[in-house]
Amino acid sequence: MLVFTTPAFAKDTEVTGPVSLDLFVSSSAVDTDFTGMLVDVWPNGFAQNLTSGILRLRYRSSQEKAGAGESGRDVSHHSGFVGDEQCLSRWTQVATRVSSSNFPRFDRNLNTGEEQARSTRMVKATNVIYHDKAHPSALILPIVP
Image (cartoon, rainbow, N blue to C red; front, side, top):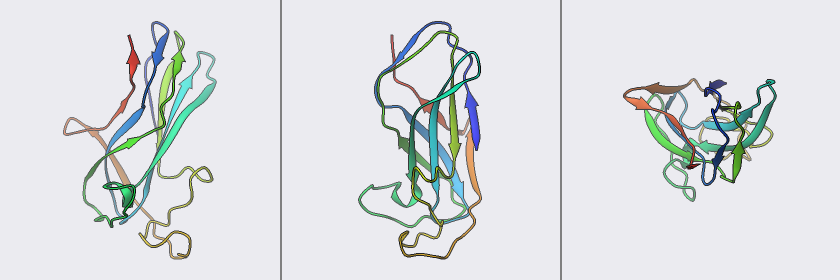
């Protein structure tokens, strides 16, 4: 799991609308998951989960039609989360947790691209998330002024 954390907010901040996570990734598997969680980290260290989402690579082009990926190829995608209104208090931080699984919240992915419900064959996926100038992965928060 990768965790990215912002500095503390200097003032109360309202986030309203769709929160999204834009990732540049590659995987050794033809299908894998990328999950993200938005977390409000209080000054005392308590971490409150706000929202989360998932992108199964086989559905990166269309939520209705699965498509096989190419292992090892860089893929740019947009993973939208369910957005709702949040008020982030002064002195809190926002953390983004990125992983390849959030079981049992989301069903398992065996990384083969085969039909999930009946497949028993599993493939280990080596996943890379790029976050450099050429691959600007980012958390997008719709902040209300």
